Length: 142
Image 1 (tube, rainbow, N blue to C red):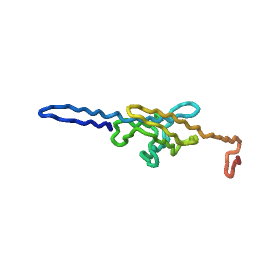
Image 2: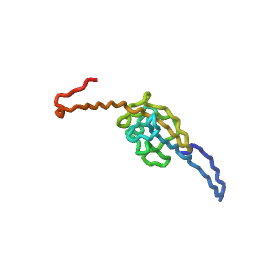
Image 3: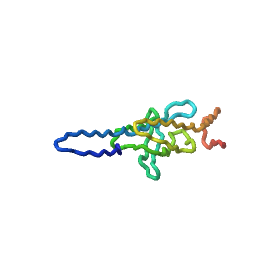
Image 4: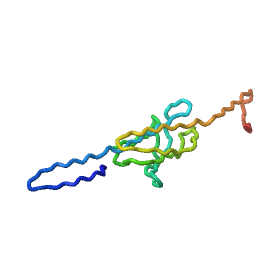
């Protein structure tokens, strides 16, 4: 919305045209990547806050590791200002990288791109080889 005001004075049979132009709202693109390979990560869960107000909750990255909020999304309109992006849950098999939040500034007419990464959880595979075929009671301590 354009906050501009204009004063108009009409005289007699005057025809006057007054134009107001709305500013294009900001757009937000969140990209989630593997911290080592830079491959996109699906399934990261985010919320977007403005001050103490949660505007969008449980936004999930797609197969391209992306969440996109365009300027013309009727259900998710952003305004110019400071926002906090909070990662609530890392994709399956990944750990959150702390701090799990980032402040960003959105400006009218601009697309803000935020790239965040996660580190894959370590894995351990134990393989037991033996001629014995009955593994009942077999256990490992790590």
